Image (cartoon, rainbow, N blue to C red; front, side, top):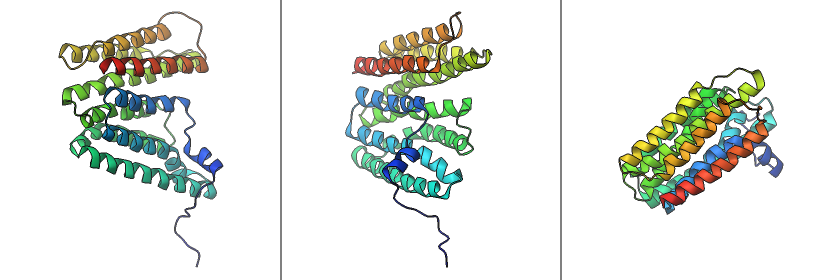
Length: 265
């Protein structure tokens, strides 16, 4: 009798690249920037294990979608193999984080898990490019530095400040890039969400500084990003190509992560 269980096999190197590597270049920055930010600002062994667990989950995203809905049986089989490997990495690393840092920090993962579940729901319906999905995905990663702060022994409000600053970088960036690319492609402008989120990010960061939970480097950097948002969406200029926007954002992201996290140290 033919085996009715799903086929699971070890993928080749080429299949690993095809199945596991995300195709959206921006997703790399949205996932890795918060991990680097948290590890530099609040280094700890538990935070390093958490970062490794998140990397496993990041690479599990594409094989999960392919295993769920791809039309090719061979590709679904390869995706299952990669998914199992990524899941094992995430489970092992998360267990090591608990063994190293205890369990108190786990509650700080709840917002990331909720936002991540929203994104996965969109992704499994092949709707990951929708605005709500991209914002949820950005939030899922950028909330993680708070848990890293707790693992490093920070006070709760100080740890929360890490997440607020990182969200202030990530969420307005997603909205800004979406609005700029849409305007360049269709001529239609819907700048209000990006502009509002940029201003709200600066205000939230400033509130944490005034409360004594963070320094001025965060709000200053968020102010620069807000100027970027206004410059791209409000003032007349030639439309920027997607590749140009990608290079600008990569430079801004690197500067934000290194500059703000080192200033925090």
